[in-house]
Amino acid sequence: MKNYLVLIIAAFTFLNCQQKESNRTLEKPANQIVIGQIDSLYSGILDESREVWVYIPESAKESSPNKMKYPVLYLLDGPRHFYSMTGMIRQLSTANGNMLVPEMIIVAIPNTNRSLDLTPSHVDVDFISGDSIPYLSGGGNKFLDFMEYELIPHIEKTYPVSNYRTFVGHSFGGLSVINALVNRQHLFNNYVAIDPSLWWDNQAFLNVADSLLSANKFQGKALYVGVANTLEAGMTIEKIQSDTITPTILTVHLKSILQFVNDLEAKETNGLKFAWKYYENDDHGSVPLITEYDALRFFFPWYELNGISDFFSAKSTLTTQDLTNLISSHYENISNHFGYKVIPPEELINSYGNSFLYNDMPEKSYALFNMNIENYPNSPEPLDAMGDYYLSQSDTINAIKQFKMALEISHNPMAKEKIEKLESAK
Image 1: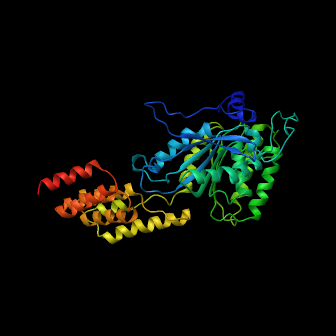
Image 2: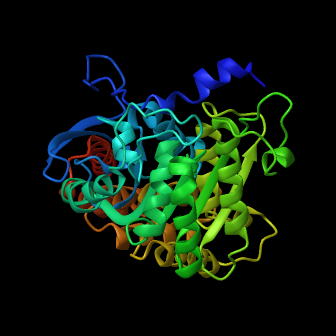
């Protein structure tokens, strides 16, 4: 591990919580890639204007005729984690054909006064050193009021988000995530606490959280905790958990988290879906990325559609009805998890339909194109795809009919060109 002094300075910069995030912007210069946009709102609760960075999936572009809602992920310490989180969601939801997690809208929250917003109680004196604490604290519940009564309603009014929410925080942000879990479990479905600062206030909140987690039920809620390796030289996990060591910020930090996760593992009857992992090769600064990845995979094991490849086998006895049943039941299951109806993505079904068409399985192709037409009646793409299906079956009349219907919905140069070629060939 790193030199002790370096670890103190680099890994626990969160102790200098008076810092403010730089007021960076995400303007869109010419010929550059932009992954998000700046939004802001005035908070009467916090008595200040608050900025948020928002990532919107490509499929949610306003030009699309198919309006759908997306799960939303709220991300603390926004500018520190915005780029990695947006890239990770894109990679796991759409890149390379991946559908391991759903596409999401990400709302990243920059800080104005980090220590004030993210700590649940006011503390004047450091319980380890006995020194006075030179930064503000104890505004955590007020900050959660801002999120519940101002930020979340603003996001739901402005963007195509559903009420399926995930909350992610690191360090003091992880402390805030645990605070939200135990005191406002109605706000979020999933909680990610990354190396949370549960040592805060001489573990006073840790004890409150433990009591609330024992007393209440958390059915339908999930928590993932990532634990960094912040061991000092010569220290071990076993020693950390003993009562004979001299407390330092590092030992108390790790000991507090281990106490929390070990106690929570014993609470099998509170309904909370829970997992945690100790990342031996990551310190406090590097642990967010790998924790976020593992948390997303933990939350959404039910999202990926499996079994489609079985239908392409020449020896397969699976029918077209089996195919549509597989897809329909899978998205019914997704809908049950989200708590609202989710239909199969248009592009995904169209892609599968084309694959069956090119593999000389027209019945399956037709069924999927028809599924898209029923699910997306205002989109020209499924009609255009069905036109291609009819062309493959040498049915020019119905092909032209589908292309013209697609053209009526939206000007499509390709559909127009197909019509002209087919009509001129008569």
